[in-house]
Image 1 (tube, rainbow, N blue to C red):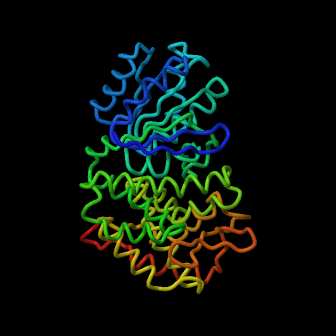
Image 2: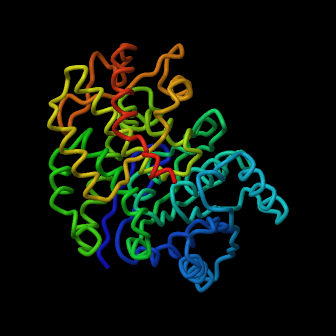
Length: 374
């Protein structure tokens, strides 16, 4: 078993274990905690994965139970959190409990938030089962739920005890889930590592089939996020870079009522925000061409009707967490692999006429034809 490990040096620190078969390390780690355990999984996780984790813990003679919640971003709500809290209370789980969030980014966001408030805070371990959750949602301690006002506006910063990323579970991922995860790796490359972008360009046909290459790329992506969140856990500055593509992407998700996957929406956001950097005079136009070519190679659909409703889109942008006085702010690039920083400012306001010009471009570039809508 090849295992790569990282320590996210925050308080408390978080151990991250990545590799094929690392779920086998879970029983010994859990035994050391002297807790009761509740696996909380979304209904999209394959049964063999859920039962496999449960059996590992039961064979170690640990007290473990499984709860489920409906899969999908549309169920990442306060109502779902309340139902899970009531299940825990009905079964008399208290502060002697540790939660195991098994699933994608919805699971880590939701269960992490639940853990942060249940009995005023209980430990949680993340077991991400999607590429997106491995390289993004499971690292850094952001938790939250969605409301009709926007994504992740209710939540907390709460670090998991540990993250176990077993790459074996990725073998069952459908193609669109692979693409969703690759988008976040591309984002990390754009803001911090041009060499990683080049590696993704040369790995289009082999990422799924070369286990060592996959392991190395996930590790590189996680390392970028680790370094950023260690410098700025609560997103007061540098960590805003991790929102590159997400200001537009979250607005698209909300307006599409989560019919688009997170990665699909962020891919569109990356292109639009890269266009903003070019229009502002910071970035070479060739970066946009390279980015679009790479996203297309990873089979991102790059289609949405969200830009057709300008008033609703601007309303969503004003509600973004980086906004100040109702004015949207955007992370920008200076060059491939380098996000822009000026006097400790990491996200920037955009002149309204420039924003309108880029949104007009987006409406034309990403709009659906009548035939596609049918």
